[in-house]
Length: 112
Image (cartoon, rainbow, N blue to C red; front, side, top):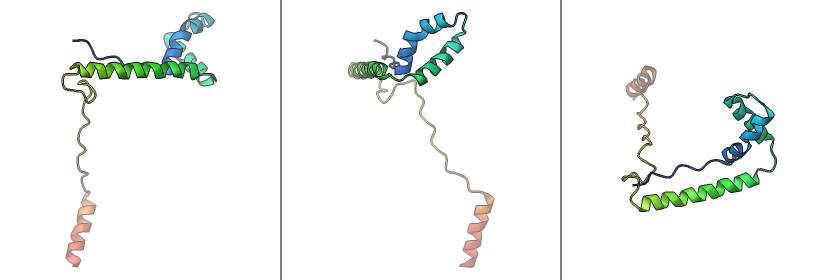
């Protein structure tokens, strides 16, 4: 059986993958973490992001289509609600009342 499709890249990640080499060229010897930091600065300052946002939207559409196809073909092993790897959030426990709150309630009972 085929693996579940991977999530699509964001507009920023698509842009960063294309800009990474030029960032390295402009800053020889730059660390990987610094490339990402510089990329973030350039992305925030960038005005024309619509090209990358359109590419990201298309990638998301392709991904959504691939996931539906995957699930229709029996993928996911019965975990069609979001994948088997995601952990369910633990149920919230009822909040415990403090001793002060309990003593207030006892006072109310006595006054009746």
